[in-house]
Length: 357
Image 1 (cartoon, rainbow, N blue to C red):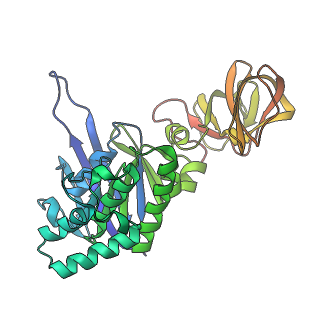
Image 2: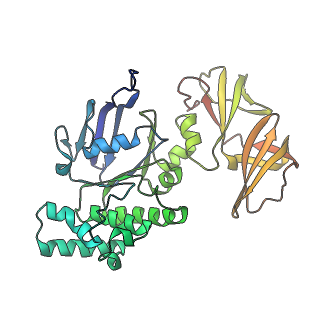
Image 3: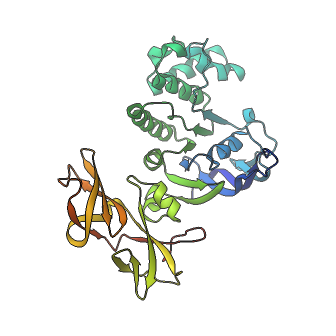
């Protein structure tokens, strides 16, 4: 059984209120563990508490309740510099007057590491990240991707127990994000490091993570593998947040042995169901053509390898995903069907939990 490297136990945090109004909880009794060597991605919308979670692990914020442990040791009262963690920020945080070599050496100088050992550590980190040619340049002479690699190198030279990534790719263009995302995943696994990675980007979450923690409004909604999150989301929010195009959510009701959602009738899942439900259907499980309900094409988004189609059926707008360049045009009449075996049913009220096991 893997060892737990980082754990949060009932961690809560509330920031000061503004204008006399009570502040909402930034974190509310968050509990989870990160195994040694695991890359855990914390994902959720802005304000959900993901960066606050990371800052509490780093020691940059103090929880109001609960405890954080690293390698089995409580971090209560332990300052950031003594936690054996290294953080990579969204904004790089590089000293503009220093060369890359000096930036990489700096955390080792602060720990009074000897000159020869510093030089070896810098050369090793530079080789790992392929930034040897940048060592004598200053940040102003580098591209955004190069600056982010230097920021990662500054974390690597310390050889910390835990890496913390706080939306490190947000300032990069889309094509470069894909390249560095791949590099981060390879780097963390090559080093055998434990890492917590915060992002609002579901693509980063799905492609990088060993497991994903989905947060909303300070609460942990689900912690599972990318496949489990995608195929068996705990709530309708989790289902719609992860995946592109986003999951269709259709209002539904129970009718005997079936769930009725607009013109579609789907098998009823087992267990006790509320009267009002929501039916979740991924776009790739919506079929155009053949048998099905009559609909009209509203929009076409050709992307090359696939085409996203918006179709209206009985007043409901559904997204479908077709392979390659789809031949339909706006305004075309089309038959629409849903794969009943892939449909998910959620409670339409409360926490909107998935129903039926």
